[in-house]
Length: 225
Image 1 (spheres, rainbow, N blue to C red):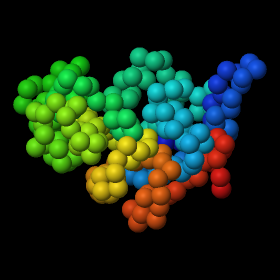
Image 2: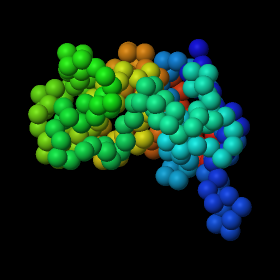
Image 3: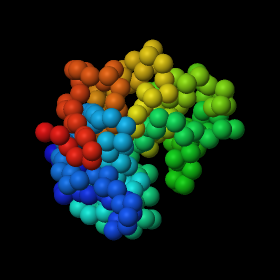
Image 4: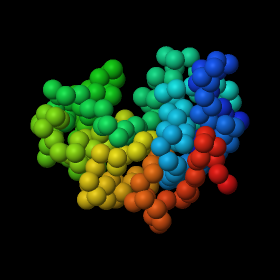
């Protein structure tokens, strides 16, 4: 079953200006439900741009991107926000946590606009904290967490809505090797949970992982066959 279908996609910055830059060139890609995909490429290759378009954070200049048969490239911004909240979990290299709030409160953030009963809210947060192995730090302010703990908090936040798609942009860039290996094990858990996972990275740690379904190389905005 096709989870993501990308057709003839271009992303051009400053189009028709002197400083025009073509970030993505005629991308065509199919991602099946439950696949773990690793986008490989050097910094500036276009992999993070592609990830942001899959996630509805930015829109393509032209082309189509269908997620669950819905063309998110054509969605108005308000509907794109709903789409992200319902179907996607993001893991960023900079964690994007809210300082001053606890681990629990950061994980709760995606749920604040949901009319959930207290018991269900607590259940969803506790389950996400447990899956990310960060439940023991639930009351701790996130600025006092270690890098690995911040990453696990970010993972719990990504999981709390039970998204069908997980997007990770350079997830090990700010981690030491031991915590990077912990993240790789977490990817394996995502696979077991039947999540569709797309990781953008140039970290050699992701090479030759037996649970990764496909490696896709990107260079100068193009997929290299």
